[in-house]
Amino acid sequence: MKKKYRIKKNNDFQKVFKHGKSMANRQFIIYTLEQSEESEFRIGLSVSKKVGNAVTRNRVKRLIRQVFLEEKDRIIKGKDFVVIARKPAAEMNYHEVKSSLKHIFKKAKLYRYKI
Image (cartoon, rainbow, N blue to C red; front, side, top):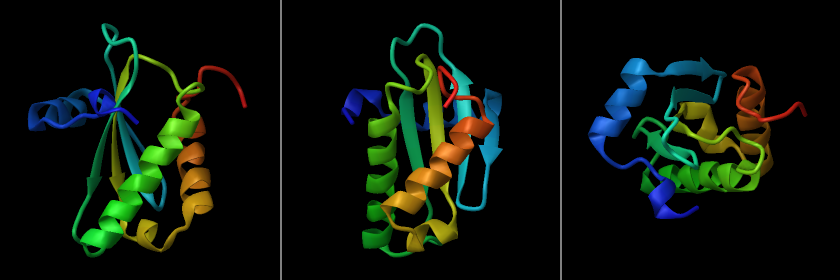
């Protein structure tokens, strides 16, 4: 995933938290905010120290980014996403992370067409 599609600034995170809608399951929380002037979606990741040490947190972030990369053609464009990982995400493998995030995508109606 290219860096220009990531949310890095605190102001952008706060805007999504304040004005966006949230959807959650046991492992992840996703905040979404409509950004109609954007041609692509942007993603911000938040993995707290409660999830694990630096190696574990970076692994979780890599897995989340990979799922977004694989699903990017199916996800609605022009939105900002902030994904917060909860503690159970640390023990998950790639396929579990993918199915968990796809579950939230369906629940939040973030796909462009039915799956």
